[in-house]
Each structure stands twice: as C-alpha cells, then as structure tokens.
Image 1 (cartoon, rainbow, N blue to C red):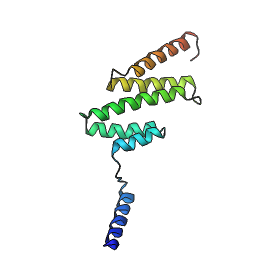
Image 2 (cartoon, rainbow, N blue to C red):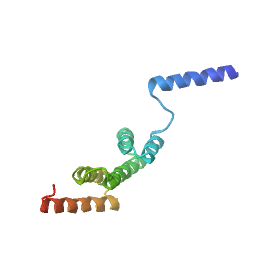
Image 3 (cartoon, rainbow, N blue to C red):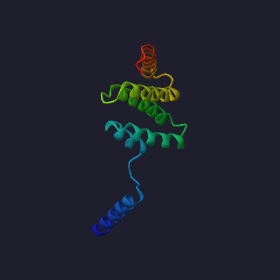
Length: 126
C-alpha cells in the first residue's frame, strides 16, 4: 500500500512539473505574490481569474486593492525617478478605481499625483 501511495505522489509531482499545474488556488497564489512584492505577477493571476469569473466579488475586490497597493509601492520606490513612478502609479490607481470607485486611498493618491504632475509641468520639471 505504501509503495502505491509513494508512486502516486511521484506521478502527481511529475505531472505538476510537466504541466505547470499547481494545487494552490489563484487567490492564495496572488496573495503570496503580493506579500513578496511581486504586484505585476499577482495582478496577472487575479486578472486571469477575474476574467473567467467576472461576477466574483472577492476577485474583483482583491484585484482593485492590489492595483492600489502596487500604486503605493511605486510611489514609495526611491529608485524610480518621479517622471517614471508617478505616471505608472497613477495608472494603477486608475485601474483600482475602475474596479472599485469607493477605494478612498486610491482616489486620494490619484488626485495627489495629478497635483504633483501639474506642479512639475508648471515649474518645467518634466
């Protein structure tokens, strides 16, 4: 019996390796990526799942929050120049608000970036 169980596990592992299949649900996978700061990968996982289940409130909510969190991470990134990080962050906040217009943090940050960009333009700092 133990021999067959070991063989079964081995075959399952080979299948996972060959097909790229995994036993982790998309939400758990995305949350792990988010914790690791891999927002773009998490967004890809969530987008794919959301497109297959557009009525799923949990996926829509976490996708919106992930866009917003990615925007915040971009704003905090000291290695990116403002002319690079702010437009990209603003895009993330816009995506978040498209999915959930009630995300006040995303709305506030979007408006703040607009003010920063207007200030840069007024002072020829683009």
